[in-house]
Image (tube, rainbow, N blue to C red; front, side, top):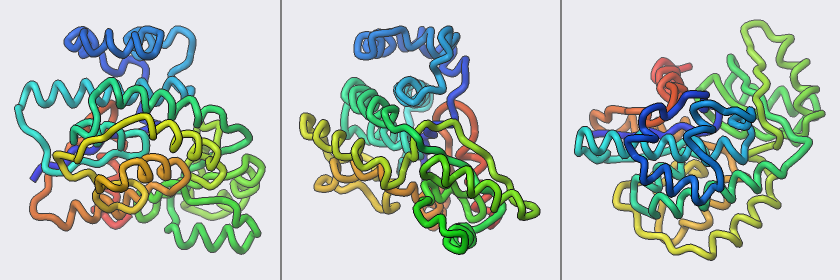
Length: 282
């Protein structure tokens, strides 16, 4: 059994995509037309230092994940048995499952990135060394209950999301604990939290303009680690913006299936590392 996993924001790196832009020149040209700028130049050179800005990061990762997947198909002629993606990466999982074509997916991701980039005064941080229950208890004890766990990445690695002032206050709490790491993330908004409700609502309206196909490969959704159902396409995609990424549950399900081999399809190895942590009980 083969499971393809697609990374999300945080895996971007200047130079990603490399020769694939020329190998898939037609797709690169389609992307340039939709975006209004050269995706190859952004990913390989980032001349204006935009690659880490959400409205550029999301389309860039979607495109690089996509051409990496197309290259994999071209070389192996093998389709995966399961697909899943972390946050933005879920759109590549849906692309692989033929829920929409490349151009439609890019239009969705472009809009998603634009809406999410409008969020201000938010912040996110990775907490390593505590379980999600321990994090929640500490936040409750210190009257910081408006902070949300945005990503349940592994048993002792979570990402918190909230108003910048609250996240800054929480730093002092977590940094007092030995063997716990507080890592600020480059995010302008409180992604995957209720503070993104406005973006979710606008995106839900945007999704009404599109028709989606039944997945040809089972796709595990971030919001509940359950399979995408045709009746829940739009709600899953819009609610993902405000809901937590249930990555532990997603990986646990795949691990429960017989002999699933994971492959990370995209730049870097963030998800590969997270899977290793889950397997090791971390």
